[in-house]
Length: 389
Ligand code: GAF
Image (cartoon, rainbow, N blue to C red):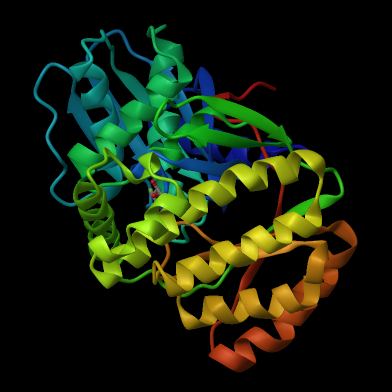
Protein backbone atom coordinates (compact mmCIF):
# COMPACT_ATOMS: atom_id res chain seq x y z
CA UNK A 1 0.00 0.00 0.00
CA UNK A 2 1.37 3.42 -0.91
CA UNK A 3 1.42 5.35 2.33
CA UNK A 4 2.05 8.93 1.23
CA UNK A 5 0.24 10.08 -1.86
CA UNK A 6 1.98 12.03 -4.60
CA UNK A 7 -0.86 14.52 -4.28
CA UNK A 8 0.06 15.24 -0.64
CA UNK A 9 3.68 15.87 -1.64
CA UNK A 10 2.66 18.03 -4.62
CA UNK A 11 0.37 20.14 -2.43
CA UNK A 12 3.11 20.58 0.15
CA UNK A 13 5.66 21.51 -2.52
CA UNK A 14 3.27 24.07 -4.00
CA UNK A 15 2.94 25.82 -0.64
CA UNK A 16 6.70 25.70 -0.11
CA UNK A 17 7.31 27.13 -3.58
CA UNK A 18 4.74 29.89 -3.02
CA UNK A 19 6.25 30.98 0.30
CA UNK A 20 9.97 30.41 -0.14
CA UNK A 21 10.07 30.91 -3.95
CA UNK A 22 12.06 27.73 -4.52
CA UNK A 23 11.50 23.97 -4.26
CA UNK A 24 12.29 22.14 -0.98
CA UNK A 25 15.36 19.91 -1.00
CA UNK A 26 14.08 17.07 1.18
CA UNK A 27 10.96 15.59 2.78
CA UNK A 28 10.53 13.74 6.08
CA UNK A 29 7.58 12.06 7.75
CA UNK A 30 6.59 10.66 11.13
CA UNK A 31 3.39 8.68 11.73
CA UNK A 32 0.63 8.80 14.32
CA UNK A 33 -0.11 5.62 16.23
CA UNK A 34 -2.83 3.37 17.49
CA UNK A 35 -2.30 1.41 20.68
CA UNK A 36 -3.53 -2.18 20.48
CA UNK A 37 -3.26 -2.77 24.24
CA UNK A 38 -1.43 -1.48 27.35
CA UNK A 39 -3.03 1.83 28.29
CA UNK A 40 -1.53 4.23 30.86
CA UNK A 41 1.13 1.61 31.47
CA UNK A 42 3.97 3.57 29.83
CA UNK A 43 4.53 6.09 32.65
CA UNK A 44 4.41 3.17 35.11
CA UNK A 45 7.43 1.60 33.37
CA UNK A 46 5.20 -1.19 31.99
CA UNK A 47 4.58 -2.68 28.53
CA UNK A 48 2.63 -1.30 25.57
CA UNK A 49 1.77 -2.73 22.15
CA UNK A 50 1.07 0.05 19.63
CA UNK A 51 1.61 0.25 15.89
CA UNK A 52 2.42 3.25 13.73
CA UNK A 53 -0.39 4.06 11.30
CA UNK A 54 -0.58 5.27 7.71
CA UNK A 55 -1.41 8.84 8.74
CA UNK A 56 1.52 11.13 9.33
CA UNK A 57 3.09 14.56 9.74
CA UNK A 58 4.99 15.61 6.62
CA UNK A 59 7.84 18.12 6.45
CA UNK A 60 9.27 19.78 3.33
CA UNK A 61 12.60 21.38 4.17
CA UNK A 62 15.79 23.01 2.97
CA UNK A 63 18.72 23.60 5.36
CA UNK A 64 20.07 27.13 5.69
CA UNK A 65 23.62 28.32 6.20
CA UNK A 66 22.66 30.67 9.07
CA UNK A 67 20.84 30.21 12.39
CA UNK A 68 17.36 31.20 11.32
CA UNK A 69 14.41 28.79 11.56
CA UNK A 70 11.48 29.72 9.34
CA UNK A 71 8.48 27.41 9.57
CA UNK A 72 5.02 27.47 8.01
CA UNK A 73 2.02 25.43 9.24
CA UNK A 74 0.09 24.46 6.13
CA UNK A 75 -2.84 23.20 8.21
CA UNK A 76 -3.16 26.47 10.15
CA UNK A 77 -3.80 28.84 7.23
CA UNK A 78 -0.08 28.95 6.48
CA UNK A 79 0.67 30.68 9.79
CA UNK A 80 4.40 31.37 10.09
CA UNK A 81 6.91 31.29 12.87
CA UNK A 82 10.48 32.54 12.74
CA UNK A 83 13.17 32.40 15.41
CA UNK A 84 16.92 32.32 15.77
CA UNK A 85 18.97 29.42 17.10
CA UNK A 86 21.40 31.97 18.54
CA UNK A 87 18.97 33.28 21.20
CA UNK A 88 17.15 31.38 23.94
CA UNK A 89 14.08 29.70 22.44
CA UNK A 90 10.94 30.65 24.39
CA UNK A 91 7.33 29.45 23.96
CA UNK A 92 5.32 31.29 21.31
CA UNK A 93 2.68 33.47 22.99
CA UNK A 94 -0.23 32.56 20.67
CA UNK A 95 0.64 29.89 18.09
CA UNK A 96 0.42 26.69 20.11
CA UNK A 97 1.39 24.50 17.12
CA UNK A 98 4.80 26.16 16.92
CA UNK A 99 5.62 25.28 20.52
CA UNK A 100 6.01 21.62 19.54
CA UNK A 101 8.59 22.70 16.97
CA UNK A 102 10.33 25.24 19.20
CA UNK A 103 10.38 22.72 22.06
CA UNK A 104 11.94 19.94 20.00
CA UNK A 105 14.63 22.25 18.62
CA UNK A 106 15.37 23.75 22.04
CA UNK A 107 15.75 20.28 23.55
CA UNK A 108 18.11 19.23 20.75
CA UNK A 109 20.21 22.27 21.64
CA UNK A 110 20.09 21.34 25.34
CA UNK A 111 21.73 18.04 24.32
CA UNK A 112 24.68 20.11 23.12
CA UNK A 113 24.01 19.38 19.43
CA UNK A 114 25.13 21.81 16.75
CA UNK A 115 22.20 22.85 14.56
CA UNK A 116 21.73 25.21 11.66
CA UNK A 117 18.63 27.00 10.48
CA UNK A 118 16.00 25.63 8.10
CA UNK A 119 13.14 26.74 5.89
CA UNK A 120 10.29 24.29 6.28
CA UNK A 121 6.60 23.72 5.69
CA UNK A 122 4.74 21.26 7.92
CA UNK A 123 1.46 19.51 7.19
CA UNK A 124 -0.24 16.32 8.36
CA UNK A 125 -3.29 14.10 8.18
CA UNK A 126 -3.24 12.53 11.67
CA UNK A 127 -6.68 13.46 13.08
CA UNK A 128 -6.04 16.05 15.80
CA UNK A 129 -7.43 15.65 19.31
CA UNK A 130 -8.54 12.08 18.53
CA UNK A 131 -5.95 10.26 20.65
CA UNK A 132 -3.92 9.12 17.62
CA UNK A 133 -0.79 11.05 18.61
CA UNK A 134 -0.74 13.93 16.18
CA UNK A 135 1.47 15.84 18.67
CA UNK A 136 4.02 13.04 19.02
CA UNK A 137 4.16 12.64 15.24
CA UNK A 138 4.93 16.35 14.90
CA UNK A 139 7.66 16.19 17.57
CA UNK A 140 9.24 13.13 16.01
CA UNK A 141 8.97 14.51 12.46
CA UNK A 142 10.88 17.63 13.50
CA UNK A 143 13.48 15.64 15.47
CA UNK A 144 14.01 13.26 12.55
CA UNK A 145 14.31 16.15 10.11
CA UNK A 146 17.10 17.76 12.14
CA UNK A 147 18.79 14.43 12.85
CA UNK A 148 19.10 13.61 9.16
CA UNK A 149 19.78 17.13 7.84
CA UNK A 150 22.63 17.79 10.25
CA UNK A 151 23.89 14.22 10.80
CA UNK A 152 23.14 14.39 14.51
CA UNK A 153 24.52 11.48 16.56
CA UNK A 154 21.09 10.32 17.74
CA UNK A 155 19.29 6.98 17.66
CA UNK A 156 15.59 6.74 16.84
CA UNK A 157 14.95 6.25 20.56
CA UNK A 158 16.85 9.51 21.24
CA UNK A 159 14.59 11.33 18.79
CA UNK A 160 11.60 9.89 20.67
CA UNK A 161 12.99 10.85 24.10
CA UNK A 162 13.79 14.34 22.86
CA UNK A 163 10.19 14.72 21.65
CA UNK A 164 8.86 13.56 25.00
CA UNK A 165 11.13 16.01 26.84
CA UNK A 166 9.83 18.83 24.65
CA UNK A 167 6.24 17.84 25.36
CA UNK A 168 6.81 17.43 29.12
CA UNK A 169 8.97 20.47 29.73
CA UNK A 170 8.25 22.96 26.94
CA UNK A 171 4.61 22.30 25.98
CA UNK A 172 3.70 21.26 29.53
CA UNK A 173 1.94 17.92 28.99
CA UNK A 174 3.17 15.14 31.24
CA UNK A 175 2.86 12.23 28.73
CA UNK A 176 4.76 8.93 28.78
CA UNK A 177 7.11 7.63 26.07
CA UNK A 178 4.84 5.29 24.07
CA UNK A 179 3.65 7.67 21.36
CA UNK A 180 7.04 9.11 20.44
CA UNK A 181 8.72 5.69 20.51
CA UNK A 182 6.32 4.06 18.09
CA UNK A 183 6.30 7.10 15.83
CA UNK A 184 10.11 6.87 15.69
CA UNK A 185 10.57 3.08 15.66
CA UNK A 186 7.43 1.57 14.12
CA UNK A 187 7.69 -0.81 11.15
CA UNK A 188 5.42 -1.68 8.28
CA UNK A 189 3.08 -4.64 8.97
CA UNK A 190 4.32 -4.86 12.57
CA UNK A 191 3.18 -3.93 16.02
CA UNK A 192 5.85 -2.74 18.46
CA UNK A 193 6.12 -4.39 21.85
CA UNK A 194 7.82 -1.76 23.98
CA UNK A 195 9.28 -2.14 27.44
CA UNK A 196 8.81 1.41 28.72
CA UNK A 197 11.50 0.99 31.37
CA UNK A 198 14.42 -0.28 29.28
CA UNK A 199 13.02 1.03 25.96
CA UNK A 200 13.74 -2.37 24.45
CA UNK A 201 11.52 -3.04 21.46
CA UNK A 202 10.35 -6.16 19.65
CA UNK A 203 8.57 -6.07 16.32
CA UNK A 204 5.61 -8.41 16.12
CA UNK A 205 4.24 -9.27 12.72
CA UNK A 206 0.56 -8.40 12.29
CA UNK A 207 -1.49 -11.46 11.26
CA UNK A 208 -2.24 -11.05 7.54
CA UNK A 209 -5.91 -11.94 7.92
CA UNK A 210 -6.63 -9.25 10.55
CA UNK A 211 -7.27 -5.61 9.66
CA UNK A 212 -6.61 -2.74 12.04
CA UNK A 213 -9.77 -0.66 12.24
CA UNK A 214 -9.96 2.67 14.04
CA UNK A 215 -13.26 4.34 14.81
CA UNK A 216 -13.19 7.92 15.97
CA UNK A 217 -16.13 8.47 18.32
CA UNK A 218 -15.76 12.19 17.63
CA UNK A 219 -16.48 12.79 21.31
CA UNK A 220 -14.29 15.80 21.99
CA UNK A 221 -11.66 14.81 24.49
CA UNK A 222 -12.46 16.89 27.56
CA UNK A 223 -10.46 17.38 30.78
CA UNK A 224 -7.69 15.31 29.24
CA UNK A 225 -4.73 17.04 30.84
CA UNK A 226 -6.15 17.34 34.34
CA UNK A 227 -7.56 13.79 34.42
CA UNK A 228 -4.35 12.39 32.90
CA UNK A 229 -2.27 14.08 35.57
CA UNK A 230 -4.61 12.86 38.32
CA UNK A 231 -4.25 9.27 37.06
CA UNK A 232 -0.46 9.64 37.05
CA UNK A 233 -0.48 10.95 40.63
CA UNK A 234 -2.71 8.08 41.79
CA UNK A 235 -0.36 5.54 40.21
CA UNK A 236 2.63 7.21 41.85
CA UNK A 237 0.80 7.21 45.19
CA UNK A 238 0.16 3.45 44.85
CA UNK A 239 3.84 2.80 44.11
CA UNK A 240 4.90 4.97 47.06
CA UNK A 241 2.61 3.17 49.51
CA UNK A 242 3.69 -0.22 48.19
CA UNK A 243 7.36 0.78 48.52
CA UNK A 244 8.25 0.15 44.87
CA UNK A 245 9.82 2.36 42.22
CA UNK A 246 6.91 2.02 39.79
CA UNK A 247 3.84 -0.19 39.31
CA UNK A 248 5.97 -2.22 36.91
CA UNK A 249 7.61 -3.69 39.99
CA UNK A 250 4.65 -5.64 41.33
CA UNK A 251 2.75 -8.66 39.97
CA UNK A 252 -1.04 -8.78 39.90
CA UNK A 253 -1.06 -11.52 42.54
CA UNK A 254 1.14 -9.48 44.92
CA UNK A 255 -0.95 -6.37 44.32
CA UNK A 256 -4.13 -8.26 45.16
CA UNK A 257 -2.53 -9.59 48.33
CA UNK A 258 -1.76 -6.00 49.45
CA UNK A 259 -5.14 -4.52 48.52
CA UNK A 260 -5.87 -3.36 52.08
CA UNK A 261 -2.86 -1.05 52.13
CA UNK A 262 -4.30 1.19 49.41
CA UNK A 263 -7.24 3.61 49.35
CA UNK A 264 -10.05 2.04 47.29
CA UNK A 265 -9.71 4.31 44.22
CA UNK A 266 -5.91 4.09 44.23
CA UNK A 267 -6.15 0.29 44.34
CA UNK A 268 -8.43 0.23 41.30
CA UNK A 269 -6.05 2.50 39.37
CA UNK A 270 -3.12 0.25 40.23
CA UNK A 271 -5.17 -2.84 39.39
CA UNK A 272 -5.80 -1.50 35.90
CA UNK A 273 -2.16 -0.67 35.25
CA UNK A 274 -0.69 -3.90 36.57
CA UNK A 275 -3.28 -6.10 34.87
CA UNK A 276 -3.09 -4.23 31.53
CA UNK A 277 0.68 -4.49 31.46
CA UNK A 278 0.42 -8.27 32.03
CA UNK A 279 -2.30 -8.50 29.35
CA UNK A 280 0.00 -6.68 26.94
CA UNK A 281 2.61 -9.43 27.14
CA UNK A 282 -0.10 -12.06 26.68
CA UNK A 283 -1.51 -10.13 23.71
CA UNK A 284 1.94 -9.97 22.10
CA UNK A 285 2.08 -13.80 22.26
CA UNK A 286 -1.44 -14.09 20.88
CA UNK A 287 -0.61 -11.70 18.03
CA UNK A 288 2.51 -13.74 17.18
CA UNK A 289 0.37 -16.87 17.06
CA UNK A 290 -2.45 -15.18 15.10
CA UNK A 291 -4.78 -16.24 17.95
CA UNK A 292 -7.85 -14.02 17.43
CA UNK A 293 -9.81 -15.72 20.20
CA UNK A 294 -7.26 -14.81 22.90
CA UNK A 295 -6.81 -11.30 21.50
CA UNK A 296 -10.55 -10.85 21.62
CA UNK A 297 -10.71 -11.84 25.31
CA UNK A 298 -7.68 -9.70 26.29
CA UNK A 299 -8.96 -6.60 24.51
CA UNK A 300 -12.38 -7.04 26.15
CA UNK A 301 -10.75 -7.30 29.59
CA UNK A 302 -8.60 -4.26 28.84
CA UNK A 303 -11.63 -2.19 27.93
CA UNK A 304 -13.55 -3.26 31.03
CA UNK A 305 -10.53 -2.38 33.14
CA UNK A 306 -10.27 1.11 31.59
CA UNK A 307 -14.00 1.59 32.11
CA UNK A 308 -14.40 0.26 35.66
CA UNK A 309 -10.97 0.56 37.33
CA UNK A 310 -9.24 3.43 35.57
CA UNK A 311 -12.49 5.26 34.68
CA UNK A 312 -11.29 6.86 31.47
CA UNK A 313 -13.95 5.75 28.97
CA UNK A 314 -17.12 7.62 28.03
CA UNK A 315 -20.57 6.20 27.26
CA UNK A 316 -20.52 6.64 23.44
CA UNK A 317 -17.21 4.75 23.30
CA UNK A 318 -18.53 2.00 25.58
CA UNK A 319 -21.48 1.70 23.19
CA UNK A 320 -19.28 1.18 20.12
CA UNK A 321 -17.09 -1.32 21.96
CA UNK A 322 -20.08 -3.34 23.23
CA UNK A 323 -21.74 -3.32 19.78
CA UNK A 324 -18.62 -4.47 17.97
CA UNK A 325 -17.65 -7.00 20.65
CA UNK A 326 -21.01 -8.70 20.15
CA UNK A 327 -20.64 -8.60 16.36
CA UNK A 328 -17.05 -9.92 16.34
CA UNK A 329 -17.47 -12.64 18.96
CA UNK A 330 -14.22 -14.58 19.23
CA UNK A 331 -13.12 -13.60 15.72
CA UNK A 332 -11.66 -10.21 16.67
CA UNK A 333 -11.00 -7.76 19.50
CA UNK A 334 -12.13 -4.23 20.29
CA UNK A 335 -11.31 -1.64 22.95
CA UNK A 336 -10.85 2.07 23.49
CA UNK A 337 -7.35 3.23 22.52
CA UNK A 338 -5.25 6.14 23.79
CA UNK A 339 -5.43 8.43 26.81
CA UNK A 340 -9.24 8.35 27.13
CA UNK A 341 -12.14 10.75 27.87
CA UNK A 342 -13.20 10.58 24.21
CA UNK A 343 -11.19 9.74 21.12
CA UNK A 344 -10.96 6.42 19.32
CA UNK A 345 -11.69 2.72 19.42
CA UNK A 346 -9.29 0.16 17.94
CA UNK A 347 -10.47 -3.17 16.60
CA UNK A 348 -8.61 -6.10 15.08
CA UNK A 349 -10.91 -8.09 12.81
CA UNK A 350 -10.93 -10.47 9.86
CA UNK A 351 -10.99 -8.52 6.60
CA UNK A 352 -14.31 -10.03 5.60
CA UNK A 353 -16.00 -8.62 8.73
CA UNK A 354 -14.92 -4.99 8.18
CA UNK A 355 -17.77 -3.93 5.88
CA UNK A 356 -20.35 -5.39 8.26
CA UNK A 357 -18.75 -3.61 11.22
CA UNK A 358 -18.84 -0.30 9.39
CA UNK A 359 -22.47 -0.76 8.46
CA UNK A 360 -23.48 -1.75 11.99
CA UNK A 361 -21.89 1.32 13.56
CA UNK A 362 -23.32 3.57 10.84
CA UNK A 363 -26.80 2.22 11.61
CA UNK A 364 -26.63 2.36 15.40
CA UNK A 365 -24.07 4.86 16.72
CA UNK A 366 -25.63 8.16 15.69
CA UNK A 367 -29.12 6.96 16.53
CA UNK A 368 -28.01 5.90 20.02
CA UNK A 369 -25.66 8.76 20.96
CA UNK A 370 -26.16 11.71 18.61
CA UNK A 371 -22.48 11.58 17.60
CA UNK A 372 -21.23 10.72 14.11
CA UNK A 373 -18.32 8.30 13.87
CA UNK A 374 -15.39 8.33 11.44
CA UNK A 375 -14.23 4.88 10.33
CA UNK A 376 -10.66 4.15 9.20
CA UNK A 377 -9.14 0.91 7.98
CA UNK A 378 -5.43 1.32 8.72
CA UNK A 379 -2.24 -0.55 8.14
CA UNK A 380 0.74 -0.81 10.46
CA UNK A 381 3.36 1.50 8.96
CA UNK A 382 6.99 2.51 9.16
CA UNK A 383 8.26 4.93 11.76
CA UNK A 384 9.85 8.28 10.98
CA UNK A 385 12.18 8.71 8.05
CA UNK A 386 12.95 10.47 4.82
CA UNK A 387 10.24 10.31 2.16
CA UNK A 388 11.80 8.98 -1.05
CA UNK A 389 10.21 8.99 -4.47
C1 GAF B 1 -1.35 9.44 25.90
C2 GAF B 1 0.08 9.63 26.37
F1 GAF B 1 0.72 10.56 25.59
C3 GAF B 1 0.85 8.31 26.33
O1 GAF B 1 2.13 8.50 26.87
C4 GAF B 1 0.09 7.21 27.10
O2 GAF B 1 0.19 7.41 28.48
C5 GAF B 1 -1.37 7.16 26.64
O3 GAF B 1 -1.99 8.44 26.70
C6 GAF B 1 -2.19 6.21 27.47
O4 GAF B 1 -1.75 4.90 27.28
O5 GAF B 1 -1.37 9.06 24.55
